[in-house]
Amino acid sequence: MKPLIITIDGPAGTGKSTAAKLLASRLEIPFLDTGAMYRAVAWRCLRNNIAFDDEKLVAFQTQTLQFDFSNSHLLIDGADPGEELRTQEVSEAASVIATLQTVRNLLVDQQRKLAGVYSLVTEGRDQGTVVFPNATCKFFLTATAQTRAQRRWMDLQKTDPAASKEVILKEIQQRDERDRNRKAAPLKPAADAIVIDNSEKSLEQVAALLVEHVKQATASEA
Ligand code: DC
Image (cartoon, rainbow, N blue to C red; front, side, top):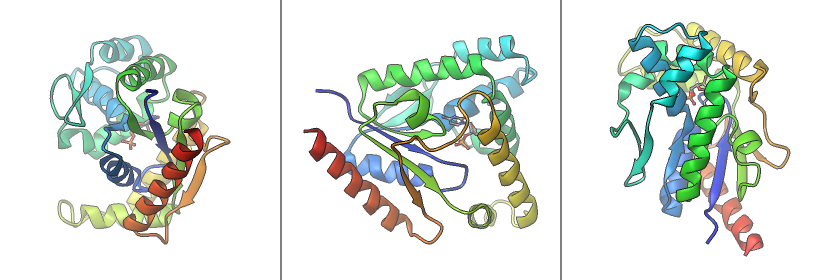
């Protein structure tokens, strides 16, 4: 049977990962966090002191990374990527290395390889536009930059209560700008994506909408 591929793209802080995880668990298929793949490359470059704009060296770091799943969890070099991929430093570096076409090509190959083996809910920026143009169902989640900054600030209250909402908003706007305006696979909805603005929606409402659309898409493909 043809693997089921559901893509969820959108800017940072729209709750894509949470929605994608929930959808994947309801469909009982793995969830592919492609942002974690870019973060893993960035983390390695930081650790090995590689300049983020040195395309050849960054590509070399990318080539030697191994990706697979265990019980629907993404493994990077055989291990569950920990919280070290989620720091502000890694977020910034990932956004820069994600502009490098050679790195993107290598990671896109890995993503397609995984999709050859597993049905997937795959989440990122280019999944519906570039990586899986024939996906069963494509979503693009959005929310205002203010809503996203507020959510991020609330998340940070446990670990960094002094974090400034204004600084977070500025960083989100800068990352959006870079992701939307880069030459390689810029962030935008696919022409056939279902666009959902979740600024005013709960996670449960978003998940229910996604499940409903997937049901319709799989029924019409059958
Ligand atoms: O979703 P995230 O914040 O974990 O992604 C980290 C960075 O990687 C972000 O700047 C966008 C980039 N990215 C990308 O360009 N393409 C993807 N498919 C996934 C992430």
